[in-house]
Length: 140
Image 1: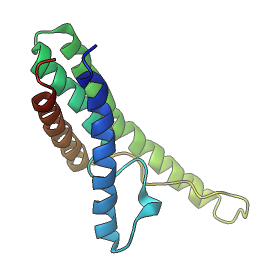
Image 2: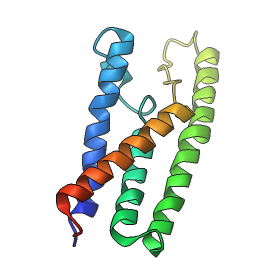
Image 3: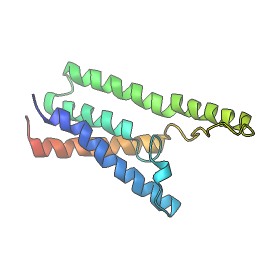
């Protein structure tokens, strides 16, 4: 097995998390531990799937069936990140408004999903990391 296919998503996820934390902390002007999680710039999910699609394209070519599967997965993840999770966030906001006077209600996180800029940042980060990993590990 070519280890690059295993380490690429791991390195991408591990790299994007701290980048997102530092960006959120700079925006908040304090350590933003409460903003760790889904959402924000860059998109972890978009970065991970784009890194794998890019690595497959670099190693196997864009005509390989695995590249087609990877691109399909990219589209599904990106549509989910941009659309579906934003709707979930709107539902959370509505539930929070309805239950604001309920002392037992645990506040639901309302910021879900990604903007197109956050997704683009994830795509660019994932593509860049895949190129670095491909250069480090060689053809495989």
